[in-house]
Image 1 (cartoon, one colour):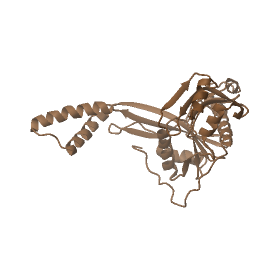
Image 2: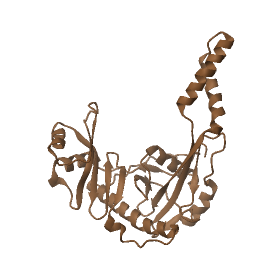
Image 3: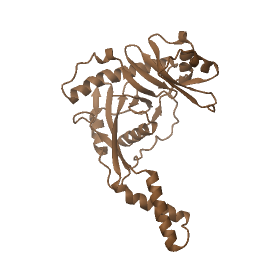
Image 4: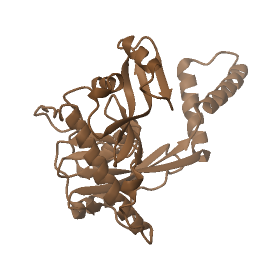
Length: 313
């Protein structure tokens, strides 16, 4: 649960669990039809619960997506074969518009037989902080979930969570100067270093001593840290990204031992949720404080982004 977390600020109110459950009923997940490339929707969080309420503060939803796997290379190969046959039969090359139409026809022909891949992840709404946490490392997939949430609610103003100071500055200071590291925090064993211009390539270091002379030399050469493995003692370890994404989250064993093992899937989910989500939110809030606090954008008094159906929703 929450191996990754992308953080967003909600600028619109979110309904309670009962109302949310009713709204979700209109956007439940179903499998792709033969002619659909992708389908998204909501599914049960645990048991038959669609909107899981916790501690009168968190509302947890489960986003599910399915896509058909149709490699572009396979389509291209068949297009070239068919085009060659058509050109041989007609004695003249196909025009660009004809090739485009042929590609669309072959895509539609192959789509119903393509294999399907289904995935899902959680979306946790902190109603007190007006935060939305999405359990994925992919911004694209997170936006799909937010689009579905927006469509479910009718409208929703959401922005990526931002801080007054850039994460790269904090990570670079922690990496270069041990005395700058906040109490209760420690470095892990991986980082990513980039040049300020972005023109000198990226150095990715894994399973290394981040206090080593080699890392320090790169920093003294002007590189900045754009991703850093850090640990909050007694809570969790994660990799902080320059866009505030929290990746590769691992919860401390001592924290996990606080929960009683559940007898069934629903009980296990309940225990995990009560441990993982509050701990993650607390660590995220501490990081935001270290970065100068949250910077909440002033939104123009323009109409909210219209609720549009995600592709094939």
